[in-house]
Length: 103
Image (cartoon, rainbow, N blue to C red; front, top):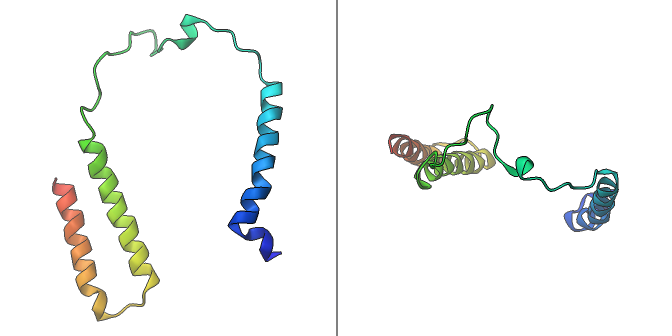
């Protein structure tokens, strides 16, 4: 039974299953009726704003780096055993998180 849990075999089993589900879903779906009203943005009867909500990618990258450092750091710490040798790593991780939070 453990062979069924191996990623390559599971991939080969699930791909035809997903393809079958897609075909069944397409056959059950209604036919598309192109309409400009359906493609327009609707926001409770108001016209959509024409400016960017957040200019650039800087806010996104700060959050992405924060979570990357936090999650990868915790994975590294979680795979080892607790000892005083990991104290510099914890201090470095904490300083990196504070630096990212302060920008």
